[in-house]
Image 1 (cartoon, rainbow, N blue to C red):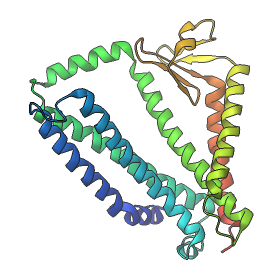
Image 2 (cartoon, one colour):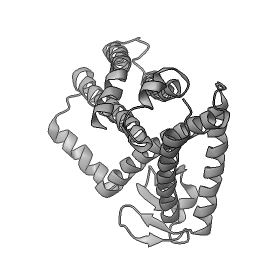
Image 3 (tube, rainbow, N blue to C red):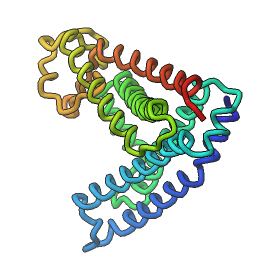
Length: 278
């Protein structure tokens, strides 16, 4: 299995590293011109949206490339090599997920470190470790380390869940229509299944309205946490209020997402191993 993980990484590293290099070159140019008066990037109102769109576009491109590689194996000749390896369906799927997470986490860390370096080089203000420690200290007063760790873990699980649902939709489409190549079928299945699972998640959150405060780890209901009604972001059972630093997760919804993720993994592995007709 580890050999197949290495194979997956080797098969995608040129494209992923090419995207990363292009993004870093463009970001360096933006930071370099941001200090010049009259420059397009001198205004934060222009610099930030363009930077965010650039990073989002790079992440989306990498995501689609990784997803597309699995679809090619289902419908192209490369699948003969992949699906005839002495590996179970779960091992093949697990290898692909590990490789995908390797790239997503690696890209995230690389982008964060690169932006930190650019700020240290091009910022007009002197920033030292003492100031940074103060910033982190003030931030920790708003949002606890435990809440940050859970939120990072929740985001990783969300990425895995989306990948699993996409892979499951592709495998189900392949099994359903077998030798017919219907390009957009998997996306239709993905939208339908996403809607169904999202509706179930919403219903579960309402039926079992118990929330875990991620800062204190106390359990309560919406009556205990009035801020839940005004939270701008909620997804996957996670609620976060950026101003107050309040963070909570719906316990039943979190359990549901974990169970769904396991079911999608086992279901996709079963389709790959038992139902894919080469």
